[in-house]
Image (cartoon, rainbow, N blue to C red; front, side, top):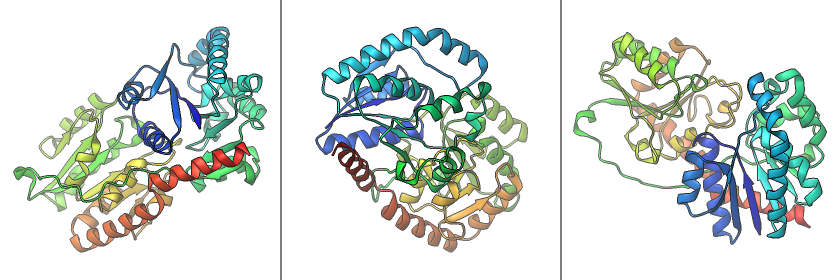
Length: 378
């Protein structure tokens, strides 16, 4: 099977890492995959993984600010020519299907595929209702007009599925629920640095941007230290708010208890260090939270917010705790509760591990994708 993945991507976050893992499994199953993306961290990583790549010369954005919409309108004639040529080449190379998740490029390319007769599958990670009302409802109008073209809309959670059904009245048969998955790497041993051996290590992994809510985690640190003086926080990742968060850490006087790692290619090396994992997302478009599953695979209890699909992954009171979003006091209380109870941490970590093994293995996830592709081809 020949698969084309077209994906505008400015960074290397959870969605991008999942796509790379998924494509690697496609390759193991004998599929040929070509990736079209703009140059950046995702493009670089895909190239390192030795996938065939096509560089996109521009980025379309109709869901950001009005400046982005205006720029996309100006680029539209060039985009039509470029993507038509791309689709012509994909057709010539006997591409069986196109898989896309990015909103803006998905709409234009889906329309053009009608003329080239290449089946299209969409991935929708998060809820779209806040996107639809932007820029004079243009995203909603375009999305509605193209809904009949994709063979399936694949979603990773009931949260996203219910959002699509409610706001777009999409038929149940059109939507396929398949969670995101990861490679199961068991029993990875990392030597804990001597200076951290007596610390309670609390970790967080994500882009440093306000949507991911690390500022609430940082604000919770002084409250936690009052009850657990040996608590040590490791914030893994980089992003546009890094300087702001560093300033907040210095302002609160907690720099000796918080470490910011910056960008890390292989975050897997950090999870074995953590006693607790925090996912404080406040993002209205939160699609899944793959890092939560990565923590669960490492038998780490997780504290997450009641935002989007997160409560579907973290079973409150079983594999972790759910707290209200944007509430550093509630987050601090949850950290203190688990931080002071090693037995409960162990119990929740084991429960999360068992759920991750059962539901989020990329082996099972990729099989569901390929079964769907093959079924649609009949």
